[in-house]
Amino acid sequence: MITPITETGTPTDEELMAALQAGQDAALAPLMERWELGVKAFLSSLGVPSADVEDVAQEAFVRLYEKRASYRVGAAFKPWLLTIAGNLGRNRLRWRFRRREDSIQAMDADQPGGFHFADPSAQPASNLAERANLAQGVRSAVDSLPANLREAVVCVELEELSYNEAAQIMGCSAKAVETRLYRARKLLRTTCEMLFAKE
Image (cartoon, rainbow, N blue to C red):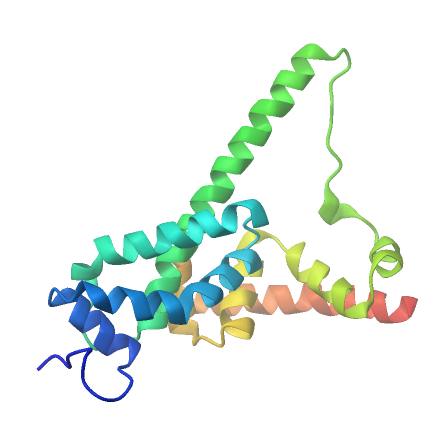
């Protein structure tokens, strides 16, 4: 039996989703209140530009409502929501990348000799140490990881999801998550050693 959202006590996310599936549209509001900041933080951690985070987060909740029938009652809500948000975030990043490529091609056509952007992830560790404190340097190191490795760190280390839950969000196997996390930690260890050496 579905727990009505009007009962005394605070319903779980999973109960709210069950209520939403049963036609109680009012269940969407508390889900949005609980998860808005978390979804935005997740998207930011994936590298979604701050100018896009609000739009993508709102779209995630629209998709949640549209896909409510596909939610399996009793399943953990957090990985399901972050899968939706992660897919939308990756789509936005691909769209941004395509626009950037189009802009670069247009500049190349207009300027003899071409035009090239510097890759911010290729900056030496000394620049990071000069520009920010150690904590910011570590954050920058995470941000500079390749997207698939950064996503593994965000899901497992920051969101504290299991390998299986992270695999659901990332669209890969749990073993692939483990491998990506190992590679990410190795890269981060090297970067952090360089940062500590500069301190």
